[in-house]
Length: 257
Image 1 (cartoon, rainbow, N blue to C red):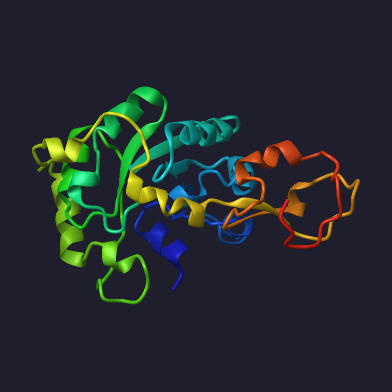
Image 2 (cartoon, rainbow, N blue to C red):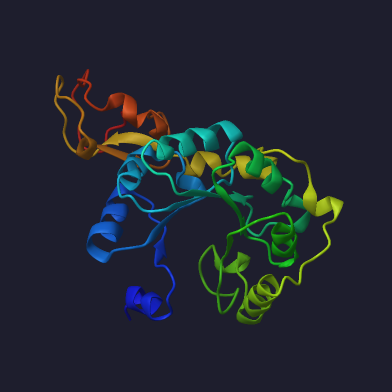
């Protein structure tokens, strides 16, 4: 089954979410994609983002478990070389209850990032959130999709089923939306919810040696990996600071930097 040709036949974009620079290289150079989607866990993986921003392809950036400062850091890094960047409001809870969606953040992001398209990435099992997001001006919608929530794996439990997805698409297309309620709207800013904090130590990445490195060697892109968990390594967003600099010690492959 060739997913790329399938998308071409439906006249839709072939979009993919890499989780490392190696995966991005494979998707871009060997498979060929139309647009990047950066997951919430990877918006500070500057090792990967540095490659992606050179590809001259549009990017969708998800913002779950991230502060406004982190989102701006990622957006500005990409924007140095890429103009077509969209941002998805997202709450990284699996599944996410309606009262945690904080959809007023969509309006907040529209003000903070006036040049970007703003969308909504949901792990909520109720499609009402998407209806309200559309009412607030969301232009892109992302949902997990599965044939059963009983399948093995972490994402199925927060996925829409076929009939739910049909209803979601039909209502968005027909502008059959929902009346916003105070519990869904939440507050109008970007912040990390307490329940999201527990995921950050697991998903944030640090810098590691991708090969043996001798003291005095200058760091090149292929010498550095971004791996999780970050642990005591330099955070992955510090990657640009190392490029071209001399190594101050010897590193073995997989050593933290």
